[in-house]
Image (cartoon, rainbow, N blue to C red):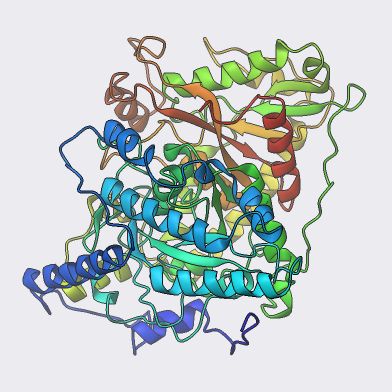
Amino acid sequence: MFAPTRSPRKSKRQKREQADPTTIESKEILPGQHSATYWKSKAKEALDCRNRSLAEVSSPLPEINAESKLQYIRASLLDNAPDDALMNLTPEAIARSISKGKLDSSTITKALLLRGGIAAKLTNCVTELLPSRALERARALDEHLARNPSKPVGPLHGLPISVKGSIAFKDLRMHTGWVSWWDKDTPDEDALVIEILENAGAVFHARTTVPQGMMQLETQSNLFGTTTNPFSGELSSGGSSGGEAALIALGGSVLGIGSDIGGSIRVPAAACGVYGFKPTAFRIPANGWNCVSPSADTIPTVIGPISSSIGGTEMFMSTVLGAKPWIKDPSLCAMPWRPGMFPDPIPEDPLCIGILWHDDQCLPHPPIIRAICELVASVKADPDLSKRIRFCDFPAYKHDYAWSLLSKLYFSDGGALDTATAAESAEPLSPLLSWLINEPDIKKLTRSELELALEDKEAYREEYAHHWNAVGTDEEMKAQGDHGTLPTFQPYGCEVDILVSPVAPYVASPHGKAKYWSYTSLWNLLDYPALSVPTPTITDEKLDMKSDRKSFMSPIDKDMWEWYDPKLYDKMPVSLQLIGRRHQDEKVIAVAQFLEANHIIGSSK
């Protein structure tokens, strides 16, 4: 019952070819095969499917007035939801309490299903709840523990987990936001990561929204519409894991599974004030996720956790890697989770944090700069921490070139397959996806051009490693540390351990404005692990005033600055990003845990 066996999974290329009986290279779908009536009818099917799943929740869900201010609705409904005290528990605390018999999975699952339904009505974050499946599983696990006290089936025994809609469940639709895929892709097996977590005792209770084609930093599709931010309906929840982040922020889940190819875990986590971790590629199995883009073979998508706590991210990583997934998926690194890789820093061996204030292309909005300044000030105000943590400026290195290279690799077919997939159902392309595939460097690459781009990627990775090594130790870096009116630090004679940087130029984007990827996508190009963490900083329209800038780093910098509105962002959470070197995933999470334990990062709520 708890350890199903699985047949070998189809590769990403096999899945694309299954969706298209011809090859990708020869695919040509003429527009007009279907009318707008067709795709709208499919969208209605999707919404009807979602609404039926919400109706299955045993407690009736309240009616939501969509015109009301979202933050006030959230307070009045969620604060009065049943089992409110339970929902303040972290995923690791819930799993621990269930395994010790202090809580039962059925109670937690019912509460999360109810909150998930409310969250769906507030933010449009859910594609379907799974009440029958989840409650049957929870009851079975409760009965198992009643018969076998102190013998949970695994470290996640009874813990409800939500899952991004692009990750495979046997016999459940997997559409990646495309109307034409609504009836096309129903997997005959679970993704490997789902199998591992289920064997560890997880209860899957919700599936969450994704954007059209996945390649967006906002979650909007013609199937389900737009997922809004839990703190303001005027702002985005981020993408492409925006449904996961919004659900967790509203207490409809405490731990979820997302995917990330350019910021799709970290940007939503930051926008919604929760934790999101992008691991190094080929540590967590990515078999069983779906996408249409050829970039799946040039820039690897990673599967990772979104959580209400840092501990939840570590629990996810240690559980999946504890199952030795490389035995079933030989593409993975045979590298178990290594706790204790980073001991707490001491004055004799301090932690060196590099501060990437900006990327020389787009200046972050005032609350983000303030969050970095407050982080530094918190350390310096503590006599003990100031001896154990040092800071140095970390200048950007050719980040504009990195985006030019990365955008080519994202759409090596020039966006043709995305355009054809939209035409197959006659659905319109999302404005953000249309913008992206029309970026200047995106075109159909010849084989030799693709090979050259991949060589350039490896060369840039090597250059960036040299850059990292030089920061903090090389006197020549002093000249590159000029950030104008921003605070600066003199280089220390120690190697940079971790970077702190913005997650995006904005706290959360207004709808349709998420057109800057580089603060997150760079680390996908380099394959560095990165963690989005909330900070104690909350936006304040009086503290985060808009200055009258006379010069700009780039056209996108000017555009991002012009639409910044302190009133729009008032009372929003502010997150930052921690970045480590390749395969130092454990170090990134350990540093975050150390900083949170000392109240340097972590939500103020």
